[in-house]
Image (cartoon, rainbow, N blue to C red; front, top):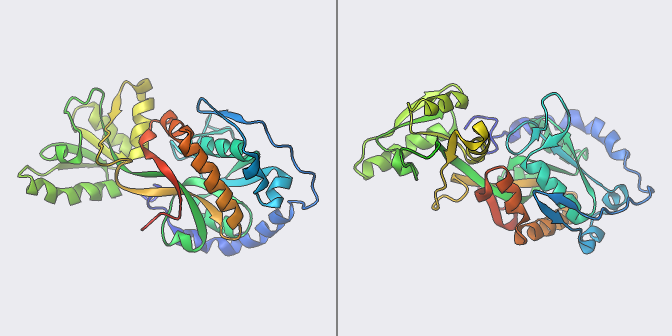
Length: 321
């Protein structure tokens, strides 16, 4: 998996940007007036075909500054399909799984989740400096990152298998790739996954995977279209989104392995919240649990072809890496 994926994004680069952001963030933080008139709570919103109703108790438990401004300031790195995307290239309107999740949480809490594009390596420093309240940007919840922010985990995803429409080679698991050509982008976690699986092929008494590497995943998809490989191995969310959108869903299928819910070598993605706002973390956690319990989160993920990555229970700091 390349460095732009949610499972390999660098904390080190993020922390180096903290000093530069601190001064400007201090000015930004001063912009929220403690004496402002409280914004009226919205009456709910329709997200992914679901009507999300506000919870007054959760709204009342929000930090006072957020209740008064009526806004949770959200950092996100755009584009990163299917989590965050522009509705139209060259315009500022956002869409995507993370954006929809933010709108559902905002409706539940009775405030606006206002998204602002921010380079990924600057997101965590900006939260620490007070420029944003949270980040929703397919961020992997790791032990290292937990030292500087808290996470409310909403998805768990890893690597997935993209096959031709109708799955002509009948690929259902990684084991089925043994003895067959499989496409993968070079120098990625997915390439390492295939290499590591060769020993499993030997244990099964099968031929090794014929690993075909490509400079870009789009090249692997072209090979799959041409029948040169039986599958393309990429991130699970990307596999689901590509299967759903390429030729309006007529080009590819995404393999669902029951033994690998959310993908192979799956890890948690979470909403990052400043450790200075534990009450906000708690309220978001409770709101997310409601969205999990009533099926809204799964419907949001399903809208983007990745229902299997939705968590079945909202957790805090569940990342174990």
